[in-house]
Image 1 (cartoon, rainbow, N blue to C red):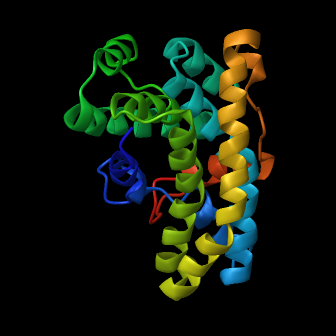
Image 2 (image 1 turned 180 degrees about the vertical axis):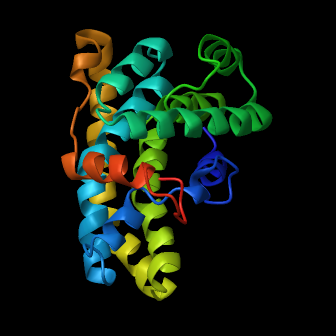
Image 3 (image 1 turned 30 degrees about the vertical axis):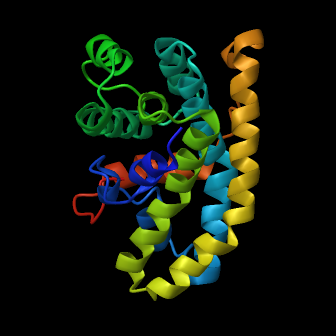
Length: 224
């Protein structure tokens, strides 16, 4: 395992398309649910323990060697919003391009062939982690961090929030990210005994509702 690969994979500058997405923060700001760093922290905490946990477990399972097509179907079942399913596949397609350029592998090639319109991003992330020599725990960390890092960066742009405050939010959530990544890695181990039903299916209905509304906005700063 090389931890340097984890730094590359989790870096916001990795060209996987995440910079164009706010993780629901744009809609939350417009709805008056995020005004400041305290609101951002609560928003990110909610994402981390719901959709973040689900994504981290899918990524961990893919990194552990579970069947990516089965995981992709499981991701579909765990994403009730059509808008977010489309976003997840677009991000997966972009992640696939970046991952194949960085760590080409037969498993990535096979998934790209099987899902030409894109697999769910956490599944692709997990395969990328495996190709990079990382394990389920590291894949879970990358997915979990993305769940909170994206909104934090977006709110800096949306509200003009002090980036030092946004960074403080991420630092304060670090112990909870540790816990979520641990839960996700443990669930990934259970997949080989209990199937994909062992993976978390935590959801955030308000994020789904806001995503559907946001997708219909004629003008927006972020794609989601």
